Amino acid sequence: MTALLAKVRACTQCQAHLPLAPKPILQASSQARILIAGQAPGVKTHHKGIPFDDASGERLRTWLNVTREQFYNPALFAIIPMGFCFPGSIEKNGKKLGDKPPRPECAATWHHQLLALMPQIELILILGQYAIDYHLPREPLTVSATPLGILSTATQTSSTLKPKSITVTQATEQWQQFWPKFIVLPHPSPRNNRWLKQHPEFENNHLPRLRARVLSLLQQQD
Image 1 (cartoon, rainbow, N blue to C red):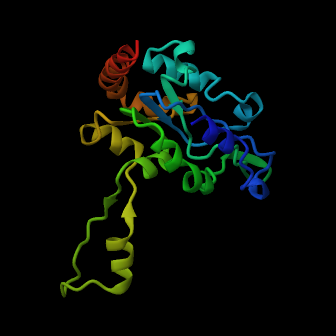
Image 2 (tube, rainbow, N blue to C red):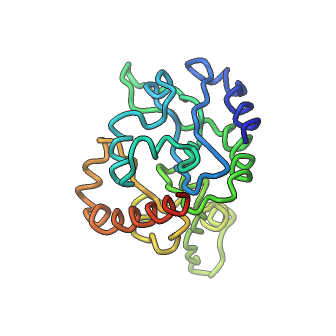
């Protein structure tokens, strides 16, 4: 694992596509039992070099009911986002509208190698659509027949072959399908306060279950 992490942190394969110098940010250990799978570092995280060292991280640690020391202990928590470097910002008319999607090269090149060296992972916390699409199975779209009972080539391509992504809301509603190995969380960013207000069951029902699971796994490593 030490050798692999050194290779990952020295990776520059996306350099031509990044707005800043490559700076892969992740946390991993072969002993970790809990994996946090997020999107990609933001620009503040790029400069700090520490994942979730902000208001989102404080909320996430509160959700998990863990200390900062526990959270940043790689023997307890692995933090492997879909993209390891800040991908840049989406801008329109001079205004920033959020970050670009994670670079796909990270998952294609490194994720399977990292996960293969973490056999003790028992819980994966999934944040964001790109992490959902990578870690959770996708649902096939429901195919409806034409009046003649025959699907055209275009319909087959869009309805039969193309998988349907499951959303954050759907995944939290269908949590039993993925529990206890996976749980999808809304991003802990303050930007999601509206979603949290619209879905009080997340804090009322899911968080107690999640905290109990996390506590159980951490106690196994004491």
